[in-house]
Image (tube, rainbow, N blue to C red; front, side, top):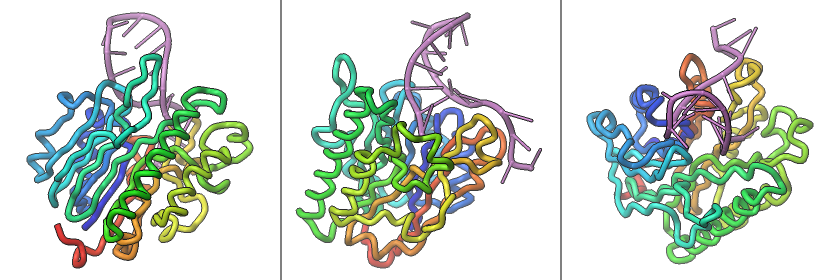
Length: 268
DNA sequence: ATGACCTTTTTAAAAGGA
């Protein structure tokens, strides 16, 4: 089974690219972030025609997550329990969507950005990650054989080498100690960030700003990750960052991260 | 060439992104 995660930065603007990607990379399950549309606006038909079931969670032009699967799509969960809300009128945002696909509990995650260290969005980000971590612990405590994949745009650069120039990011979000601790806490809970296991190299980014020739200069960030639960980790046989997807006109600013999972021991 | 922001919505100008 091939499982991919991709912050697509509008599914309506990039449905054709998504379809081409699914076919080119032979993807079974695709977790999307920043779909930027309401559920009713999601371009379902083309994906259904290609053989995928679709679960969406979107309220507006902001955020939005989805999961496409051709190996089953069950127990869909829009948002996690007690997901922290945000806003003047506190509301849960469309940043997490769970579904069971081919025996794997997939969570498509769009972690809050944080905006600035003194912004309320930053405290929201840390609380959001901590609540998710508690769930991650509980899920494997309840069932040590649970195959859980927490995939998406984590909006955290765990290592200094995950940003193209640390001097630029000093005092900014994504690289602060609390954010990195919140990210590392998933590993302390027994999960493994498998992209790092398979791709330990530096300057292997997943995001490049549209501005200032960041992509051709390879000035990017590594912020899209895949944490797998103890039972799932040994089944992950490979990980690829699809850097080519950033090329050409009409690319998202993020590229997909693809996991190859050994099907033979995963029952649907 | 891998190329000089993009997407959305109250269709102009602003917000969010990282």
